Length: 153
Image (cartoon, rainbow, N blue to C red; front, side, top):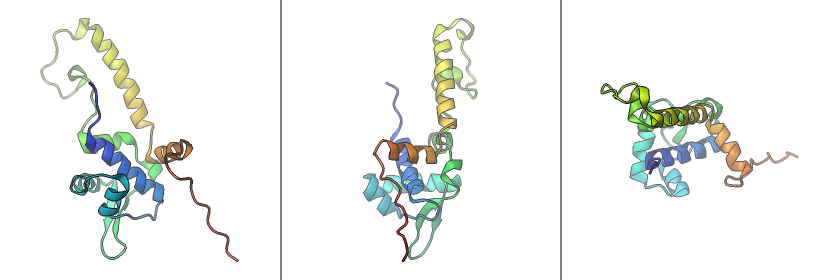
């Protein structure tokens, strides 16, 4: 069974939550853990990886926490996958780092399918940003709609 890891699942959910807050939004690891129901110790490990990769930054002191390091429309899902799990390769024979090679490479029908799947997956991951996920979540009713600023008197 092809299955995404919990690191990817939790990492995407935490980043989308930060993206939803906007450029000035900040949340602590504990707040993210509570809102997204992610074990805090595991989330902290994920946040460290995301911070080291420059996708989020931490703010110290009162009112501190985590925020996106770049605008949500400039962070692709592919970047998140690569930070948290490395290159996204569906089959060993498609991995450019695979030194073993494959004797069946030139006559393998399965590889033709794997290549098509890999191309589609790469296109989706590269073409989807955190801002896209926030928009999709709002359209689907999974995330709350943006709040309009209250008019001032």
